[in-house]
Length: 216
Ligand code: SIN
Ligand code: FE2
Image (tube, rainbow, N blue to C red):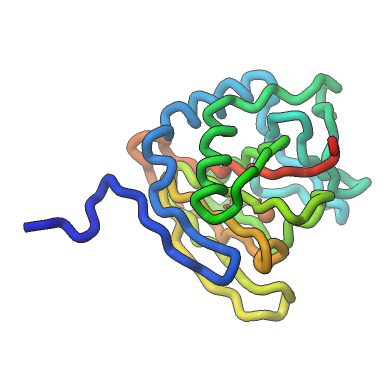
């Protein structure tokens, strides 16, 4: 019998105009992505940053690429150096760039040139409050967001904080791309539930590739 949904084939799930989930899209490069995360974190360790309001984020973060996203009491911004050691951020691993470009293209956004990748690490209980990605100068480029490890409950709303919010499970190797009319959609992550992923362990990683536009 033919398998209508073969396990090893990615499939596309539309969310709203401008937003799609590319299910299992990163399956072929998950190990390379995980090795890339380890390499970046060896140079620029994961850290829990402070929000401008003075709260410590539950998610631990690091960055790679020409620019890294940071937050502290002074606000949210992109900067070319890691505030912890004032060194440039580690180079973006080639596997991150390739996956980001292929995913953007598959979602209908050709020519994506990410210059920044935020790496989020969620231990059980960590969450990301509803927010918009709006610190990038050029909002024409999409956001490409890769899930690795433990399953997340992704929150995806509209352009206003008050719009209804959908809760969508994101599994290992799922890639979400949002741009165009969805570029400023509110999104977040519910507290991650404890578990054990066979390849990644008791943790969830998220790679958020962005074209911050600050170099143009
Ligand atoms: C984010 O919006 O920065 C993170 C989204 C995710 O962890 O999937
Ligand atoms: Fe975000």
